[in-house]
Each structure stands twice: as structure tokens, then as C-alpha cells.
Length: 385
Image (cartoon, rainbow, N blue to C red; front, side, top):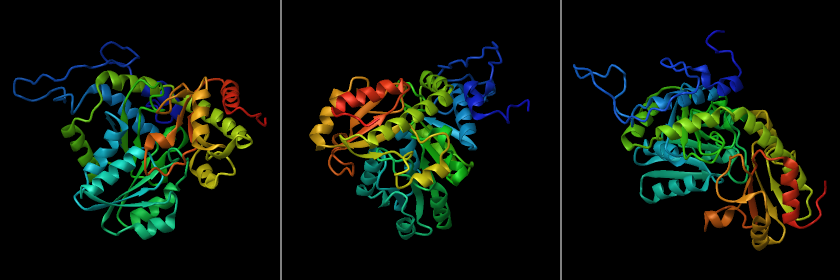
């Protein structure tokens, strides 16, 4: 079709929806740094925009592309993944009930626990994917948000989005899926019943570790979405125009980077399972993963670029291995073109459920043979090929 509605998502991403600047016919979108917009003599805004905190045209193309890729009705960009997440929770009224998984991005979990301490919300943390525990925790008419993170960071626990949505919706709650580790290349949570999708766009959506950004996508424009739009503008949790432009540029190669990293992560996970210096590997692409069947059903094209493993010898040995790697950079974050390693438990601090001997790997786009060789030399024991 002429409007591109039947184009493959990889084509939509590569061409950034195929838009051409109407003034210059440039195929690369312009950046609009203006903070304000001129009124007409009658006080109206003929350009439809008032102030950059509410409407910057540099956001439009990236938001439209992300909404299309996720199969949602609309999207919003934020100044960070945390800004996107906290905006959702700030729409809640005092005393509203939230359910979140026990294994999730540590900073969001810590933020939720701080909201509880301030008397803002009520919170239940349930085991990832445990639908019996979820059903028991749901409070009909009081639970507002059921938060899902799948795969979970850093243990790669999987949650069945469709089953979660069925239970949550029956109790009048909305499901928010943190799909940072999947991206719409591997999983589209809205197709499985999620009401909102959250991304730390700093990670694989951008893919180059040079933008701090977040995003929300909604299945439908409803009262909650209207409140999120309102709150983003009033709180000012928006991207700068240059960062929005960089994010769109990164998204154009999404369908090249994500499958490549996922395929490498699969090979590395399979190698580490047989390695004598490794106690346990966490990766949903492994047949031995307890949630592999669920992951295979709701993900396609791979199982993501993040995997974790426990090192024989405890925390001290894990720290040594992280420091001995040459290609894997010892750094926080994930989803860039370069591979990273992090000894995760010390980063999260006291109270973390992460084992103290766990190393988290973010797999980039390097040659997988080089990454495997780097792991072998750092682990210091002969690998099983």
C-alpha cells in the first residue's frame, strides 16, 4: 500500500517511517531547537505548538515510529527510563495499590519502596511469573498497576504477559510491561494484553550508549494516558531535541543490532553452561531455563542481548573475572554496540536479591568468537567447546 501500512517493521525502522522534510525534501529529519513558537496576531498558535516542553516537532517522528513498532496508539519520549517509569506512578492517587515482580530493575523497585515509605502507595512484590501469588495479591478495584518486567534484569526471569493481563484486567488493574530487554524486535507486549509498554531507551532502542532517554507506548488513548501526557508536560521530564534526534537515528538500525546481539548471546550462554568455572547461567534461550517455553511463545527472533552467570569461587572470583576481561568493558548499563560486564550485586547494594557471585553481560555486535575467547581467558579454565 502507498501509505506503507504493510511494510515490514524493519523497513519502517530503517526509513524512520519514510518521512521526508516537506520544506527541504531532506530524507534525514531536521532538529528543532526552538524553545518557543510564535503566536498569530489574534493570540492563536497557527503551527499548533506553544512551548517545547509540551510540543517539540523533533519528538514527533521518533514517537510515531516507536508506536508503530510496538503496535500501540501513541508514544511519548522522556528524559530517562526512570522519568518514564516514575511518571506512571506519579499519576496514582494516594493509597493506590501496585503489584511488581521481586526480580526487576533495581532502581525502579527501590523507588516503589520509597513511595511506600512516604505513604504514597501500597505495594506487593510477587515472584516473577507466579500467577497464583499474583491472583492472591490482586485487590479488585484497588490495584491500579501490575508491573511486568520480562526478561527481568539481571536474572532473565520471564513473565507470561497474556496470563498476567487476564488476571489483572479481571481485577480492574492495568498492566505495564518494561520491555527494555526485548525491544519491539523480539516482543510486542501490547499484542499479549499489556496496556502500557515502558522502555529505558538509553539501552538497545538507541543502541550507542550516547543518549539518556525513556519512552512509554500506550495500547489506547484513555484517561491514564491523558494524565501521563499532562504530567510529562508539567514535570518537564522531556528530552532535548538533539537527544531525540540521536534516539531516532539509533532506532533506524534496531533490526540489525538486536538480532545480531541476541544470536551472539545465545552462543555465549550455551558455551558458559558447559564451562567448568561457571556455576549457573541465566538466559531464556537455554532449553534448561525454567521459563524457556513461555519465552519462546511470546518472543520471536531471539531471546535478547542480556545474560548473567554465577562464577565458581564466589564474589571475590566474580570480581576478579570482571576485571580480567579485555573486550567486555567493566561498566554499568547495557544495550550498546560494545559488550559490557558488571558485578551486579555490589551495584545494587544491601537487600538485593542478586547472588553476590553473579556477573551480568550485555552483548554487543562484536565478533562472537572474540567475545568467547575473552571470556575463556578471564575465567582461566579450559572451556568445553
